[in-house]
Length: 149
Image (cartoon, rainbow, N blue to C red):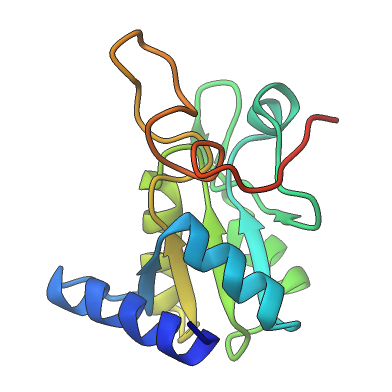
C-alpha cells in the first residue's frame, strides 16, 4: 500500500470518529509512511523519563506534551515544536498509548498544522492480562524497530 492510500485510510478513521486532526495511523502504517516519505517527521510527545526507561524510535524528534514529574502541560510545547516542524509538514505523533499524541495532534490541528497524524496504540499500548505493556498493541507489539539508549 502506498503512502497516499495509507494517509487516506487514516483520514477516514479520524473523520468517522469526529476528530479534528488529519488522521489515525496504525503503527505499521506509520512505519511505512516514515520509510516511504522522506520528509515525514516522527514526533514523540512522551516525557524524557519514558524515552529513557521504555525506549524510543530511532530518528524521532522529541517534544514532550507533558513534563515529568507531575505530568504537567509543557507550556513551551508550541515553541519547541516550531523548532522541529512547520504547519505544512507531514507529522506523525507518538506517545505511550495514543492518548497524549491524540491530544497533541488535535491541538496542532487547531494551530493550523494540517498534516498531523496520531499513531494508534502509541509506543507500548494498553496493558495485557498480566498488567504489562508492549505486548497487546502499539509500536513495540507490532514488532517495529525501536531501541533503548
